[in-house]
Image 1 (cartoon, helix red, strand yellow):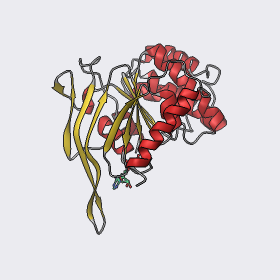
Image 2 (image 1 turned 45 degrees about the vertical axis):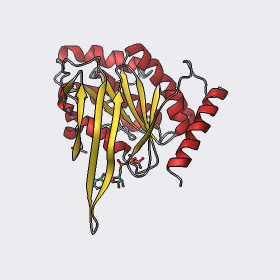
Image 3 (image 1 turned 30 degrees about the horizontal axis):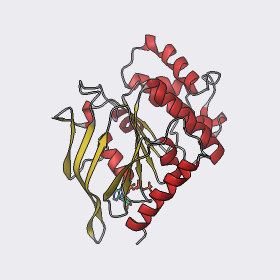
Image 4 (image 1 turned 45 degrees about the horizontal axis):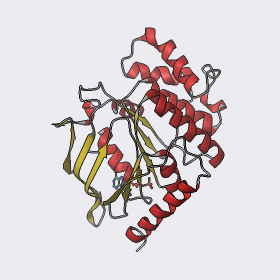
Length: 268
Ligand SMILES: Nc1ncnc2c1ncn2[C@@H]1O[C@H](COP(=O)(O)OP(=O)(O)OP(=O)(O)O)[C@@H](O)[C@H]1O
């Protein structure tokens, strides 16, 4: 995806914020050489409640990214609807920020410059840039790094910049596609905790893609489970008090329960 395409995934919010975003009967086919087409999403329903932390969990290649891209508008579904507050909505009606597995920073711009680039693309007045850059870099504990270049940062720091950049445009919904999967587990745990602090403080809605059951249980209010045929076979509440601890036996128990369900539906 080009920078221009990335920028295009966010747009001015409509007046439907505060309601659940409802995807219904989403179907997506991709062309496959020699085989006509393959179905990646099979009549998928998804409810993203305002203010919730929602995860899409499933094995590699099951269609999680495709579904997230339907929300962002990067993928057009063959069938299905997206509704909010009783009305049809398109991705252009949503206020979205996107965080990817790779930070996708511009190496020739400073950390602050990367954030300003996103602000400019969203039409945020230049008079607000300094405040936004300072506020969101501080939020991800990088307030000293604004003048540094991404090439001088660790992987975890780069991902923090990507988070700050997404937050700085002040989106209502943050789409996160396996944002911690390329990091070491120690850094990933730190960032998950920071993300939850920010999510709570800023009252954002998060739609989070992962294939890591432990990560989904640790982070989520509820989890959608997809199988490798592109079907959403369950929605499960996590129902564990926050703040959560990695060594809480309830987390391990919930993880084991979800794993068993996957085994029944995926590993047949
Ligand atoms: N543009 C495309 N054209 C053709 N096939 C595609 C395209 N994008 C994805 N696919 C295929 O669709 C299927 C679902 O891909 P998708 O990236 O949505 O899955 P995923 O669950 O996010 O996988 P992962 O966890 O590995 O990122 C895969 O078989 C993939 O190869």
